Image 1 (cartoon, rainbow, N blue to C red):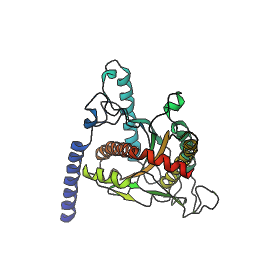
Image 2 (image 1 turned 45 degrees about the vertical axis):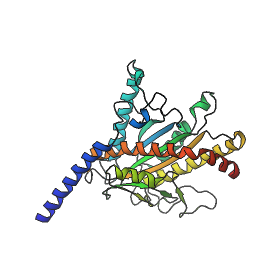
Image 3 (image 1 turned 120 degrees about the horizontal axis):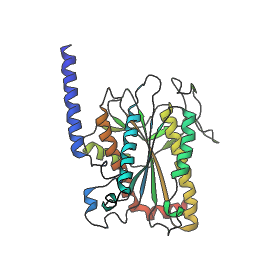
Image 4 (image 1 turned 60 degrees about the vertical axis):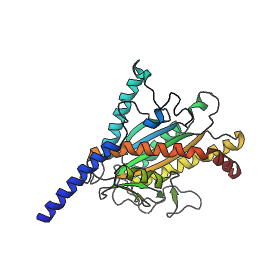
Length: 316
């Protein structure tokens, strides 16, 4: 008992130390709006003017079997409240005077029901709404660099003691328990495409090593994972990666005709610990840092845009 008490005390001290470091490291994203920004990029009035826009779509899940309180629901709802407050501030006269770097925007936050078939429908709707370039819709002149859309899906791993950025998803639904609709597929393919199998995988196009290293430097316990399970989390990730892949394929065809890339779609799934393993405040700080680092990573990737477009032409 004494050993357990000492271990718990040490764990509590580590948790408080982590929260303190996170609070010092994470850039503020609440009071200035949902554009993720950095002090070094606000040094001049034209700072960030040549950076590609980044649109973030963030999802979480509600409760499910044996998980009555899902931390991702609380995180996404908090992010949505921050977003709504920021939108109202920007619409006010005082808000318009703020100098913000408009290369990243939390465009949508949503808590999805933990039902695989419902998730499929919502992902189709979200990608249909957000996988487009605003300048193209407005009839504006083509952008010099592609517009980035990043889907960040959050799920809970109640056994985890740190955060995990999932690198891939499998084309297999093998639910150990029913989802919230009562459906429990066993060893079924998620997408029944020609030549597909249960071992088929889809991999994120984001530079996870770079993102994880940046998050570790901020003091977070985080790593990568190659297995998102076979429940609704994996289902969500495989579906979202497949739709993003399709959107990018359509964009490659446009590139072949116009020689200008306008859109670049990414998806990422992140597993967070339960609130018993890590406080919701630490998880909130992590989410803010994650969105900042994901945005920064895709902005940096734009430096190779010209070479990528050439490669797309050859591929198409």
